[in-house]
Length: 193
Image 1 (cartoon, rainbow, N blue to C red):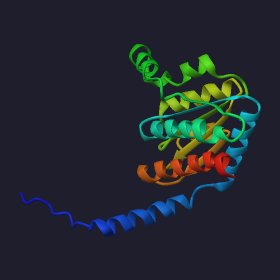
Image 2: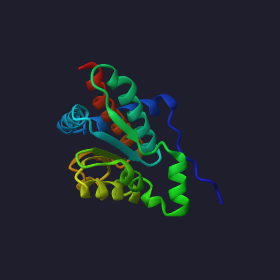
Image 3: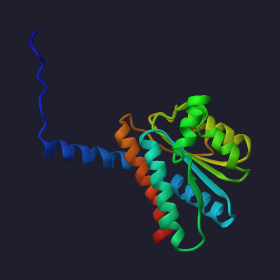
Image 4: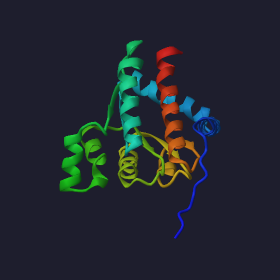
């Protein structure tokens, strides 16, 4: 059976095409939603509220990156943010995953720390990761402000959030790039504006 040949695209052409697609995806970012998220974060900071961030895979990495930027960068010029990534306690995550279920890894942490008026921000490209969906359901049930960064059609997560920042792309890489840019906009507002 003859092998199929795939027509190769040169690296330079691929890079140009990819960049154009990323810029097109960034054009879909709802800047009014980002402005609303800035206000939610500012209010949480000014009222001494806690901010929790979570996600899976690349979204977990973006959650941790965002928290690092908010702690080190955005907290250096004025009041400090009380912010933590629920993705960062590997022993806690693996203990719950092993002994209970992966679906509860964020909710169980919120049960320890979250209070009414706190902010829970969940990132999910598909919007359908059960652990972030459960986390936002719990956060809503106790009166937290909720923000979701989603992609594709928003999944189950988007409608749960009080504020959704949506990148309506099918390509996971461009969704995650949009989320990272959105997180940088949120953070750098407090660092530079």
